[in-house]
Length: 90
Image 1 (cartoon, one colour):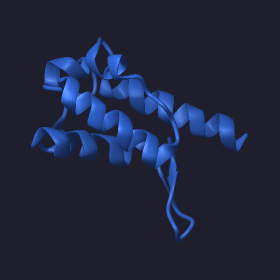
Image 2: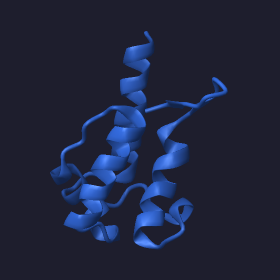
Image 3: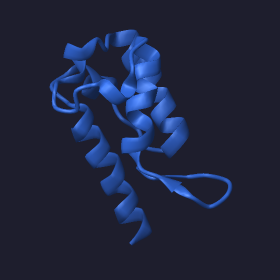
Image 4: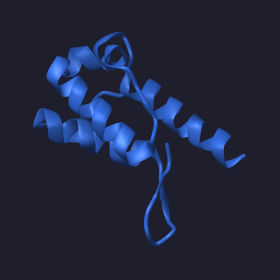
């Protein structure tokens, strides 16, 4: 989902979601594999809960915890969040 800043500029989920996940995992978010299931890169139930809250606070989108723990990839979530923005802006 594109997040609008106070100055009116927008930021794609691709710009902030990897950094957020990396911060929570203690990794370089820009080096996270976009095509591997999130559970394989180290997301556990606690991290999933934190991500769910952070994403909702930032975008208003509700993503169930299971999505962060299943076969969902970083690329899948970025695509979905950005598509939600396209629909809202249309």
